[in-house]
Length: 361
Ligand SMILES: *Cc1c(COP(=O)(O)O)cnc(C)c1O
Image (cartoon, rainbow, N blue to C red):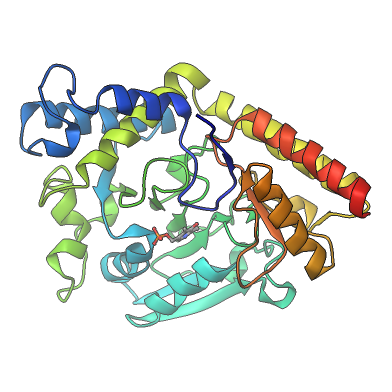
């Protein structure tokens, strides 16, 4: 068996021990005589899976008791509508910081439901930095401020959270969830599509402070109301059962094999550091993001020559480093080094880049 190093922005790698465990339990989950894929979501055995997934997420992320954890479907993109439908209900105003395409999509969707406003943007420099803000940049009457904490396409991450005063902070954490500790209490709501750091595509995680619930607009579809899912333990309808099971295995891996999020962060800093150090010293490759805004998870870089970029992507793929092509709107390369990418994968990539530079520099 030969597995590649997959640098895809998502769906992305899962830890080998997680895949192995899923394989071992495929035909018979813990003596139930069935695969988790086949179980009734109303069965006792499945209830114990979703309960452990939630308990593990609460413990790994240190989620305070006054927050609900919801396991939903629809991807992060559905949250672009759910957030305004449920939260844009006081003044009907919300502030958005535009740090890339996902943040912009969230803003555009919110603008369909109320007075969404751009409070800050880094579009002027193709989203290569996180704009600095002060409390004065935000409308104190806004129902919430929305940010995208890690910008998957451009490779930026907030070096610190914006000070929004009393305005609730909402964040898309699709591409940085579980990558390092996060102070959940700073946020009114967090959401993430699972396919980057948590599970296969098809599961969406929402972590929402209880006082934010119960104010959805009348027109909100039942399935898009957080209360529907909060009151039914994410079982109003059939949840994405198998994905929640893989989420549980990934959380067990982080807790038991990695040693929790502080240890995960150290490993991620080591991986990102290897690549950034190489880029900072290379004469051929260079990173595209301002240093203080660099992401731990998504690392874009270029040679400055499109033909050479294409040659690099092709030769890297042939050598077992796949999905290094940059986002179609940005060009160049991007290495996504999510939790499941081993340190060894980045070490080998850097060695490959050094050899490529020698031949082509
Ligand atoms: C991938 C991604 C999305 C889109 O997620 P879907 O689950 O495909 O809707 C949104 N925001 C961020 C930050 C992402 O990385």
